[in-house]
Image (cartoon, rainbow, N blue to C red; front, side, top):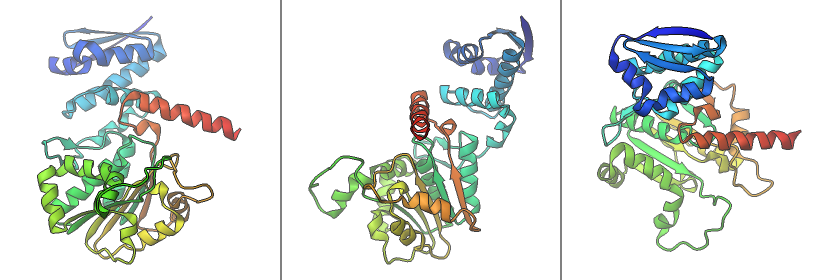
Length: 320
């Protein structure tokens, strides 16, 4: 048996590290097959040499998060474990201090993974950013946070959120109400993100003034959008023609973020996804960044990661 000791400066660090009912440390013990004990200001890890080495790297990574004021959750413990497995836990310091904005409930919005950090930096540094990846990677939420941040800082005068009105494999039939009520169900995820950032009252006020617009993609045709932060969500369901139409709406002083999941295309058979096409055509254009998320960037329930992995394996088997 091999043993290694880590010293902590304060008892609170050890308490945060272990979590309630030792849930954080149990994840590390289970993953690496080691035993972790706390003795005052020392944490003792025992097991076989390689497992202990990886567990120590994971624990040091978690201490980096604790020291910068992060509260540990199952999601970020599992993420740090995955980084330690790849020998990348030292990159965690890149995540520190990057608060994009504060939600209406006072909660800071920060990138939680290196993939999210890269995405946020791409939005800051480029005029157009394409973000593609599986469900739960924060593509839309972080884009809306960046839009709200730019709007509050008066870098843009308007936020425009849009998505194609494509049914996800089921016919919704006739929807009652006026035109806005008919398209609202398609736009609900965008409203949810904005309500979270601004609060329902502020959102209503800005929408009435025309400072915030949530509309289907068809409404974008023929417009030039200056001084605006424009987000196209669910872009995998645009056609090649729609994507070209949307990207050419770009005006002066504006930013565009395009998000989508190329594994969830709901277009009729034979129609090529505008997002897949754009990622191929625009990859070497200055001022345009292309970000691809993986299942490691999923910040929802662990089962979401497992579901994505299972589907990816199935797709690989089909190709073979």
